[in-house]
Image 1 (tube, rainbow, N blue to C red):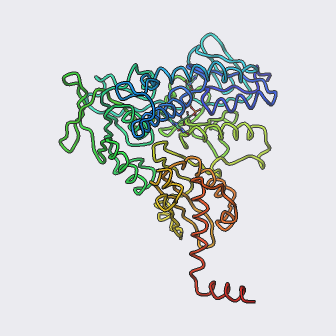
Image 2 (tube, rainbow, N blue to C red):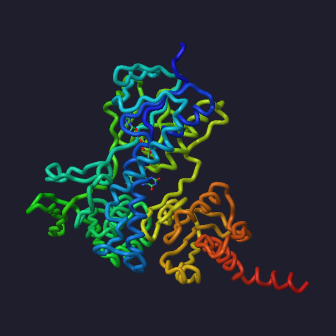
Image 3 (cartoon, rainbow, N blue to C red):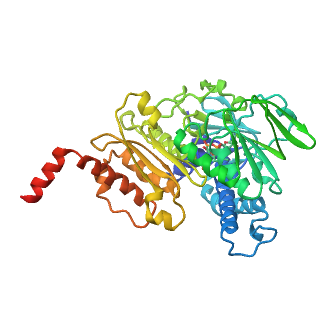
Length: 470
Ligand SMILES: Cc1cc2nc3c(=O)[nH]c(=O)nc-3n(C[C@H](O)[C@H](O)[C@H](O)COP(=O)(O)OP(=O)(O)OC[C@H]3O[C@@H](n4cnc5c(N)ncnc54)[C@H](O)[C@@H]3O)c2cc1C
């Protein structure tokens, strides 16, 4: 059967963009459907605006600490309208950078939701398109928990928070994960009183308690209130304020309420049943090669529920396209690639590989090597001496996982991801020169500390002395 297109992508976030741009670069005939904006959640209402806001908040925080510029009412003039500025950045990126990448792609933008007619046919608005292979990259939406009273409140989510006209006086945040933490710090630093309320015992619950404790300590210093282990029983609008009631008999109030309590899947409009694509509560089901239950259809990025991160989404897009053209024995198992991740608060919190809890649960023997920023001259002199690098490794230097809390950890974690993925052992990292004085130098210190630990063995000491004196 002749199809109109080689590749059809539904959704143009990081995953769909990776598939369609790569496929068009290869000379394939590509169509892409996006119901809202190119760039998806990441570019428009996720990673990019949130990091932009955090950067402005960081500057405002630094200016308040070290006042070197003219302030108006305690605020640098350029930081008075952060959301207006963010929208202007997004407009510039979209118009000047992104659109150009789609020159060779048939783009069907803002014409409605795509829906399957059969495994090779998709309808959108008045158009019907057929393709040899279809890549679903439709992402997720913010979940709104079933808390009594919540439906009567004009809530904020990541989908509308970056379009606010100004910073509210106070912000209640339901959720202590990455989004809740980043927004709490950004808004607090922009002059708002931020309060996090969530049900988990510590912030960033998929990370470890030590990192969370350090982050919470920093939050408290900045005036952010954190309520861990709370069940919210009711939300109401009282005297023009949002009032939130908890199972600990607390009444917390705020001008606005941000809900950052996880994600939900929204497949109803896609009509996946017409293509026999299986999905469940955790997204579209995929095999190791990112194929769905229908061989010619792949599901990439957040919609398959695997990692919910932009870089993972882009990587999956690339792998799925490669898998679509490779013989079976060359196809890549997406689960074999390590996925580093970072919470972009200050201090940044980053992980890769197994956490200590996972190592213990899996009965894997490991040694913990830890160095602290407070023991590093460069970190002290630059006043960023909060945090640590912690690595779990075998006695033979095989790396199991790394967690870094502190300045630059989002950059540093990539080195550990490379080492983990390429099975580079600690002695090799020790022999790698690291530019000084960077925070990344602390990673080399980990490898040196691991080596010093080896030198504590009497046998190794004797061997070293013997060889030296030969
Ligand atoms: C506030 C916030 C901050 C974040 N920060 C980070 C970060 O720092 N780092 C990181 O790695 N990740 C971050 N994320 C997560 C990141 O945004 C997602 O992991 C990423 O966007 C997923 O990409 P995707 O391509 O799978 O889906 P999305 O980016 O969600 O894109 C899916 C697209 O599909 C479209 N679509 C859906 N259904 C249809 C349909 N039926 N027809 C046509 N189009 C459709 C949608 O309109 C959307 O544009 C953040 C998320 C949020 C909310």
